[in-house]
Image (cartoon, rainbow, N blue to C red; front, side, top):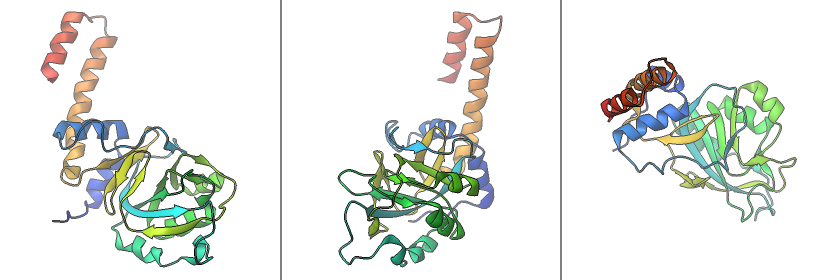
Length: 231
């Protein structure tokens, strides 16, 4: 059964959390292995000063190392915008560059970021490259990518709406994503609404441990006792 989208209040609660704390909260529920559900360090947050990004995945695969079979460029393929709007807002576009050597050209720059923002998207995650980062940053539109490129080369869409993989992270259409300066992960729909509550509990425990470590009352005995209370 397909899960209902989170309420605006629930989404706001998730946006208040950093991605590391969200990862800890997901671990609390034991719904997946601890080495799954997040992109590796090949996917970098380009605008770490922006607030956390939360949105539902719109998936697409592209290639850019050679022309498309029909000779059309990426801006001539407009049918995928209808697919964007079929996913609940807020939306995050997840682009798998399917070339053997990803990143020859950029699918997203100022123009396409402006289009996507107008369609209710809040960011892009790609194993490929992006460009026009100064202009995109000024828009408040978040980018996660493997790097930058000066050209869009022969960028074109080859698949819309399927499962994609970026930086070792498998993403399916409609999955909830959370990202910040630390990276990006998927939030299982089954526990998404409960993550802020679990995160608050974990954060309180961490603050207690950190306070002990920084106090004049610190001792290994007290540290071990506190850690035992956490288990």
